[in-house]
Structure formats: structure tokens, C-alpha cells
Length: 109
Image (cartoon, rainbow, N blue to C red; front, side, top):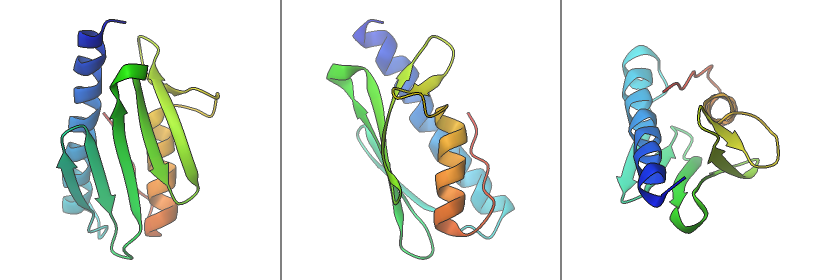
């Protein structure tokens, strides 16, 4: 994957996170504050816990930090997969956000 291809896919991912937050705020009582600064999106939940998603351009990875730990994702041509085999980005983000917010949240591209 070239740097340009990585940035294209990564920008789509971050935009999808922001769009999902807007949808979840409209459809649920989640009250997720999402702030983007460059290649980083910070999700802050009503209980003040956070999930941080940021781009690691030199590695062509997206990193996600949640209460339960930190995770690295690499695009495999179809989806963002955890580099240690722990699953797909959107499924993981939904699980971690649900755990931290106490609500059933479904993030999607």
C-alpha cells in the first residue's frame, strides 16, 4: 500500500467514525462528544471516559486506545484488521464504546 492509498483509506475510516457518532447521538442517549484534530479523533462519553483513534502514517496503521487497552489496525484491502488477530476495527470499536458508555452502540463505516 502506498502512502497515498493509506491516507485515502484512513481518512475514510476517521470520517466514518465521525458520521457514526453523529448518527448514534441522534438515535440513542449516548451523548458522544467527538473531536478531530488532524489524524486523531477523540470520543468522549457522558461518564468522561475516552476512546482515542489516531493515524500512524509511517506504519500505515490506525491505533485505537480504549479503557481496556491499545490496539493497532492495518488495512488488508477490504477491512481494517487488528495486527494481533483480535478482530475488525468497526466490531472492536462498537464493543469498546458499548463497554465504556454502558449502552449498546453500533459503529459502522
